[in-house]
Amino acid sequence: MKQILTSLFLILGVFIDQKCEALNCEGCVALDELSFDKVLSKFPVSLIKFDIAYPYGDRHDQFAQVAKDAANIPDLFVGEVGIKDYGEKENSELGKRFKIERDDFPAVVVFVKNNLKGSIEHFKFDNDKGFTAGNLKNFIKQKSGLRIPLKGCIEQLDNIAEKFTSSSEEERKKLQKEAERELKGLSEDQKKNGQMYTKVMKKLTSDGAGFLSTEETRIKKLLTTKLTANKKEEMEIRLNILTSFMVAAANNKDEL
Image 1 (spheres, one colour):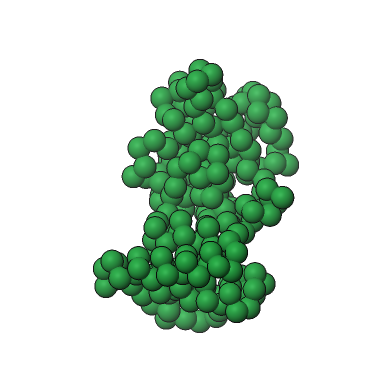
Image 2 (image 1 turned 120 degrees about the vertical axis):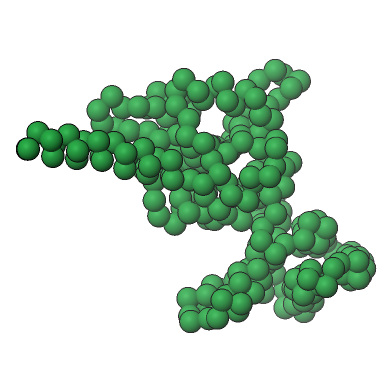
């Protein structure tokens, strides 16, 4: 009887182990040392997270959100490499190859095919810049040109927002008029979100760049309070739209 119970526990353990691994990240694929190069060679751009074998926590959730949002982008592959520092130390060689230590986990790397050189270039995300879905998406766009929209954001207005933060006062007036023209062509469902862009533009003009961090803090504080589902979604979308301006401002700062 004891042997039967032991066998059942072992089988159950394997099942749970496999199930957990399958559920690590919806929308991304687990890679190992044998499949890594084969898979990456098939895609123009790949986003890979190097982490512990069974990751969890806010950073993993942020990465999982990117994977989910990128599901319909054919040129982008999203995967993860689980590295074990015990037993047979699976995938540890991949960690060494890209100079990733356990203290770096989770380490996110964007791989971009360079067709001219016939090689794959890779760029490591700086966790200190804020491990959020928005910042990861912006990093992908910076290094590959691929855009993954944030929930509630509107691509043509995102493009204007990126120009707005680094423009002169005269250019901002023109961009705001351009945004207002874009608003007229939006569907009724999109107009409410579109109007948030123009409101941010007006506040940036009147209050200066400091408005971005102040408003971000205010919204994040609101999101920790009890809100209705609709109000919470509205705040999340407002934060995403604010991010469109903030990442552009950060890019401009990095270029200086």
